Image (tube, rainbow, N blue to C red; front, top):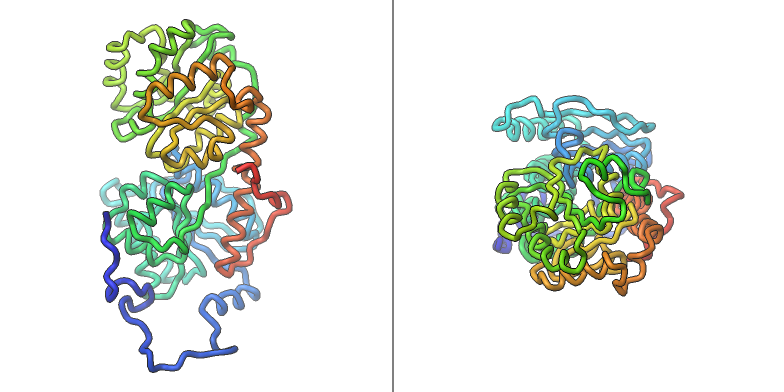
Length: 439
């Protein structure tokens, strides 16, 4: 647990931390009481705003934060079409193809620096650029960059906000990151679970933590037949029931629950003899997983698919009959959205951000991730098409529901509202009027 900030040190997040205005100094009133936000809003009615965007990756790494960062940059361009966006990526070593927009966009990266030097080089890059350019606002898609934002706020009064996902928050218990998050204009949490962890573990003010859930590319996924080339690759029949999990096989990723699925499979196989479990992903935990498969006698049931390239991922979703990832530490889980957009039933844990992704159980089955019997029952009832949640047997309704709740148009609408709260002239796209009422 991170201790609460000392009342006389670091609690006043301004140019001079720990110093508050003396009580005997009269404060301005009426028209003279215009705040810094008012001044910025007035200036932005005359000129387009300039934003700095700090991201860990745009193309160099594939993962939840990278996917979020890509959509975040695209949405900023849609919300602020005339704004000047200057993007700084820590790990990319080339200039990616960015979304086309009216306003100017610049991209800088530090990925060509060696690993141990890259953090220092990137910090110097974003700090120096902000000192020179004095952006109107800084947005970071990773909490680890916020100490630089805090220093800039002290020195130049530059406002900043950050996005908190999941694992980045669990590891952000250092005083420098926690203190920087407390000083941010806003912290965006991708789920209620992440928000609650920020408030309880890092002692953030709940009023300064807002929900900005993940989104996904709905057009990349759809309700389609099982791909023949994957049936052939894995020796499967079209009618054969398939369970799918996608994720890295690493000790740090065991919270995703693939061990629990393996332990549930003997009972599932007794009820459905032809079932197959397709576990996609690679990592150093594979040898241990293979040993567990042998201990459980599941060599003929489990298929370790290895790395799944992006261009095949949608086909893997179409290959399965149920997507299962009973995690207990997931910040949100974009894979749930992708599986639902493919019309597939989803099983997830009821103790983390998966609850948000499945709309409190309206779009999928939430179970206790530590209860193998409960997992067995859920898998069997879904594969036998007798689960009481009727929407699980209606692929097009699953797809429509997840698009309504977490489609890109809704993401842009939510982000635009937050930007307007910062005094930025964000536009509300006409297609994003609906607010995802299913959740």
